[in-house]
Length: 430
Image (cartoon, rainbow, N blue to C red; front, top):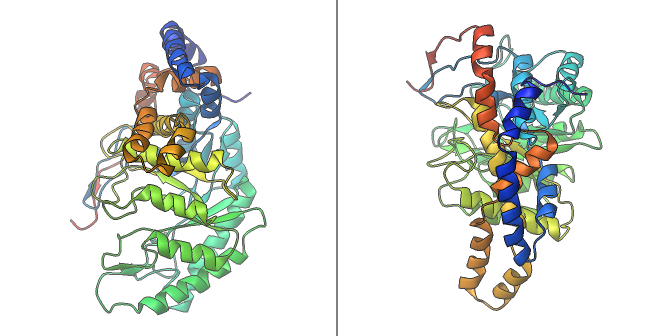
């Protein structure tokens, strides 16, 4: 049996005080859904099986290009991070895996497996880092990595990604995510075509090192750290990369990596249609790549993305098997609380999308009834599915109200007393 960090008695007491109200709310919602021909238990069962990975780096306090203000009880190493991830998993029962970033999380694979298995956690996609320089690194990535003009620097970046694959194999991971910061800050700084060809050549070497049952996710980003041009700048370029590399290569969609007003849900549909949707980094955005909590700015867009995902799920789209992960920066909140709420928001969007009357929607679409088509989506989105989410957590052994249970447990104060305070500091362009 897996260990737990928050007392099981505390969680049981927390749930006992809320269970009767939840059961009434669940029954009331079930009655209303039944009138729409929807079985609430079927939706609950799907939600209960739906999980999203936690990024190891997400449990630390984030920052901006200007500064970072450390929080109390920040994890000192990957093993502290795994414990924080275990708290999120225990209380939400929605985050069964952890995604590691190398070299930040580099440690003996056997120790990592033992640490995760204590809490029943597994490992999601491996993430390489060639966008910053590691200690004692021979060649700098200041002017790029996989697209660098220097062959030795490209070789170093390729070898790092191959090392990530080897670590992942030892951990039981089945995917590698590659994001690079390569690009330029001034017109004329690089030759666009030559840089992209160098990138493709390097990625072909990495792709060749994949085990047969692995997938390669490439991630695009419009800007930052390169502000004039970025080698992998949008979903079209990302699709070209996946198509060029082969059947095991897919596009990863980060919800913040798009220009303002871009129709992300249509991008998702296109990638599904042509078999190249690999998965998601869920977050939210106001201005650019803000990495805000999922659903905190535009929850309707998150729902619309899941509307496309559920449509593909129900129609058994060929090759449809997206990976789901949170990718956020927590500057002013407790990262554990933000990640718990974000996991719940992703589940919420999934549950709402499962409520869409797809037969009616298709009829309205075919009949060019724009008003009723959009109202069909709104009817699902406006449904308060919180009783479904809470009941799924309760049945799985989680907390009816994860944040309340977490605060009752005093976990943050406990780890703050055990983990030395981290000094603050500035950074970026200040």
